[in-house]
Image (cartoon, rainbow, N blue to C red; front, side, top):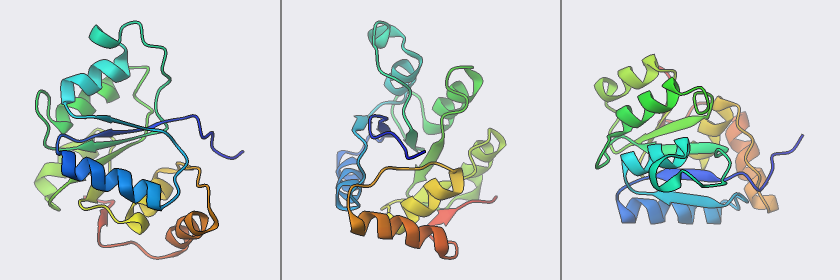
Length: 165
């Protein structure tokens, strides 16, 4: 069954410039999902667990979360730990984002079941490769977007995606 375009992709990134680059990459890649951008770790946990300011929210869980490691409030690892500990969010696919390829930074994440890291800036091929590795089907609206997705599925691992630690 094709993916639903209604499911959002949640980007948790405190750097406005990086968030805009990710958003532009997704638009250029014809990703058909609405994007939600949050800039603080605690705000992201509250959004996903529907607590505090989001207690009465009606949104569904996102199709995918892109989570930066360095965030104000709670850092990416703390957010990941809370989401994986909650029965409602433990199965949401999460891609960790970092400016470095630090093994020390990612080992604790891998122990929690998040074994995919995207190195910023994120290239479309690396994004599609990572979501394919997670088994997530993103909806794309154009022939070129579909071709980019298929290309990532058929090529060898990119140096910009780390999948083992």
